[in-house]
Length: 308
Length: 276
Image (cartoon, rainbow over all chains, first blue to last red; front, side, top):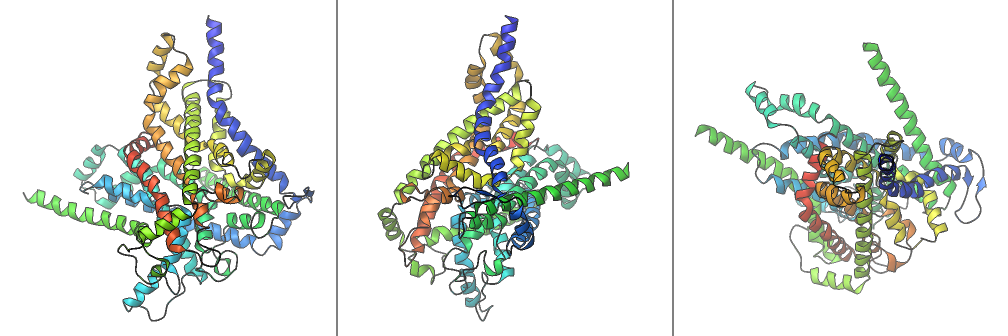
């Protein structure tokens, strides 16, 4: 009986995790590995792929007009949006969780609503707000007498980027706030009360108690925001796909909002069908991130070493 | 007396600032719903701060298009994806949280690594795979592959470690309850709030997904809402009012399920997130 019991114990955990791994290997892992092969080919998606070695990568890293631009744009968006989302989300959680706020639950739920909005709607709404001739913002500013001639927010690279950042922060702020709120609920109120009695101010309590205790959630929110940010595509694409931009340039004015994912989509499934190059784009981003992560890890590791 | 007055002032101030931020966040959302009640000409003329009179007209136009078909498609895809994904994640969470087995460490770190890898890395080959399988222009292609949800597995594992007592499982086993029965009758009731959390996250993501349907679907009758909306209007003139009304309509189911689930959603997040 003992032996039989043991065998059963061995099989059932595998049965429970099997569905996940079957779907994962079949539809995630396999395409990821297969894409790696495709990135070494010249392929239009219809005819047989031609193996061309690292030519795609050489092209991307040396002569391609858009690749580095899209990488830098993506990094810029990540570099601005991630800290804004992490610290903004935490600040908002503190505000929504403040002791004397009335209607906490309602406010918390309302702040989550932007996350429910589909990127298509977000793109359309923000285009309608920031449009040059008919946008809400310009009309309000002009009606109030604060602006004489309409400003083309979506037409200049700088403000176009700011709008994309606003879209991202707007959509994900309430979502991330939820995670911080849930973490703050786990902090016992005794700690806060003790700190208050000791005479700690609000700012001090925030930095000395709330932030350190939310470290795990901060890391989680940061990592998911970075991964999400690297895949940014739908919001900027929708922003510039409407009537709002007469320019046909890829990625908004001066390609200032072209992200890597957008460039990948456009190369492999949009204006051209160069799927080998498309696969190389996604792998190049991956390699750049991996190198980046490796060196920052090495640096921080050495920093710790020096102290010991 | 004095103290309660001070508290009341603080309460008013804190509520005011919290509400102010929420109102700013709500503004684009509000604009969407207001614009849905305008005609396209009005959208470009009137500031959308109060409701217009074109809602019925816009809805009529929507009904005249394929909108109901898109709605049905989105519902079908999102419901199937959610049921499959939450079930698979819960099962895997149970396997990882409550069993010791060979290769567990390696397999779980695979789940963690998967969370860190953008799925779009395999996009090109994924589309090719769908072509080979003949799943282009099917909803199966949107449903089945999204069922492997690494975050869901991670989430469920963490949640079960803390919230499903080992003693209950052990005593059930002594009473002759097998693992399958234990999963259905003991584990699931314990993790209901985490499942609701996951249901909401997966449903929202599936309902709003745009890129994969855009690449895989090219027959109008298969379109989901976000994709269908971008085709509304005729070839020469896009009807933005109808589009926005449609997008607003498309958001309503999400608002409803979020309103229904929000209590469990927050509870589920709290119980799972304490450990991060």
